[in-house]
Length: 447
Ligand SMILES: *[C@@H]1O[C@H](CO)[C@@H](O)[C@H](O)[C@H]1NC(C)=O
Ligand SMILES: *[C@@H]1O[C@H](CO)[C@@H](O)[C@H](O)[C@H]1NC(C)=O
Ligand SMILES: [Zn+2]
Image 1 (cartoon, rainbow, N blue to C red):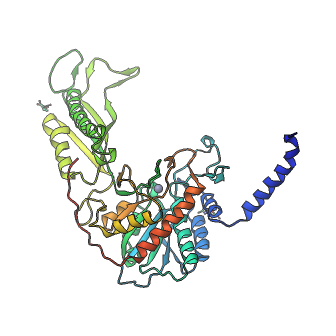
Image 2 (spheres, protein in one colour; image 1 turned 60 degrees about the vertical axis):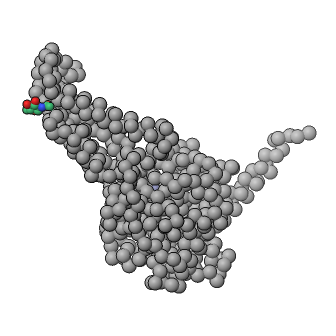
Image 3 (tube, rainbow, N blue to C red; image 1 turned 90 degrees about the horizontal axis):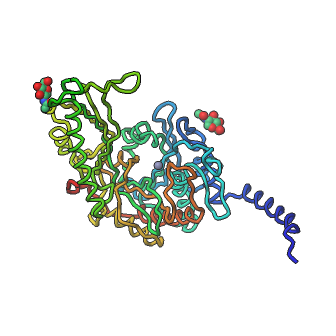
């Protein structure tokens, strides 16, 4: 007869054994877990620990050179290089990831966010598991595997692996500063792979552009007066007229999305985020006075195909016209055009040979790409695209819930290991590519 209690000592023995071997083992999964255990969350990310960890691992891989650069006295960046045989005639390729992560609220997680706990079904829980410590380690694991499987393989192009700080706080002190340096120019970068996002189905997602946020505040002024009087052109009336016009614009864009003609990230979105008016009183607001000022704030998101000049014209003439006694303020939180005046996007057609090489490499690894997308938010990729360098956002995570910045962020071990195989193919193909790329503008069409 089966007696469950008799099995307990045996079970404990195996549990102890597995704990010991897990602690002692040095596998791609244990190396990923150890990287995840380094807390690099804002507001005080520790950059020296992950850089030390990465250099130690890089030192175990043949032909990888490492270099630490300082963007400010306290903010370092790590650059690893696998030298190519046809450098400098061929520009280099660069694989980017960021060292930092957003904070986590441990009490809302089922496993502590810096424990990298692995469940029996292979899910590894940690802040940064998806965004984006996975790719940071996968790049290195792929190079290690390529060299051990195929010791004769030599990249033609220099392969750079870059670890940047400060991405989660806008990247201005990270990648934004780095692209301005002499060291960056000397890398002669011809193509970049940066982070992407998980996909919930069987296809990998790829991003060719980011949307650019504009923060807009519109303000109306008008003659104040008694709350009982009917008269024209109060501040409230003028602001409400604008809100009506903006609401119609918003609906026209949303209709395109609802009709399935474009994705959310492909149209200009405008959402009201605050309303401010009224004369405060100890119990709330003075109810018998029409105020002399009223304002509203909006979060506008512009795809790279949008025309910023036209948008400004619409705002000036229709949303906050001076003849309606209105003013506006726009804070641009990014750029829509590159240094050549082209829309900030990377072509995903045959006219961009990097696209074909990348796409074929993913297919050769048994993967499939879904329709290229514009990322709804922003990443460091915009700094490279601004220089006219073709850049794709890609994190090979399929059949995975999208958990970046969420509680209980995790990645499955099998998904992580498959991602290494995908990068083996990508790094081999891209670094062997002998063709050239000439940066050209894509046509601008206003959605
Ligand atoms: C980062 O972490 C390491 C290891 O815990 C520690 O020795 C070091 O002082 C930390 N650095 C900073 C700047 O906090
Ligand atoms: C704008 O303000 C001026 C001066 O107070 C006023 O004469 C005019 O009627 C106002 N126009 C509108 C449309 O509010
Ligand atoms: Zn990220």
